[in-house]
Image: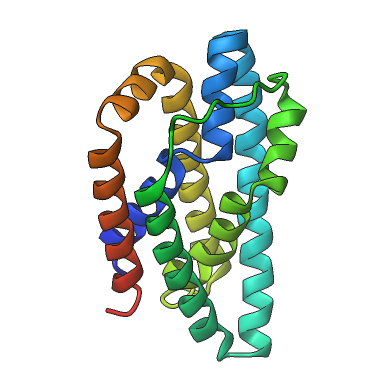
Length: 191
């Protein structure tokens, strides 16, 4: 397993702006840290649940159809290239929508967030299952990825205002660097 590519993929997907991170940032600004943390806990639990569901579904599919792994690697790579392109062309000037900052809104947002759903369905078969099929190893992978996601959410809560200012100030440079790193991760799935 290429740990560097795995970590780069997880960090870029979870730390870069997406619907959940933008809502967390908006919640910090409009409702404060306490409400943002409540939202974050809901988002984290749903994120971990989606990863566990993905691991179970992919485990069953791999046992039933061994060639599904190659298909999932292709989908994972294409998705990483798509995300790299989206990050490269992202427009941060559009205003964000404020949420009510509840645990349930954070939880439900993950199931409606295409970035999270696609990430959770591709990260396990692309990075973990080609090398580890044991339940314990896959479970450790789910836990590690959930912790990375939680750290990303917390980063947006704690440093939201500062992080937003940096992203806006150096928007294009940050986008280009994140896109390059993400595209690199997509290529490294096949190495």
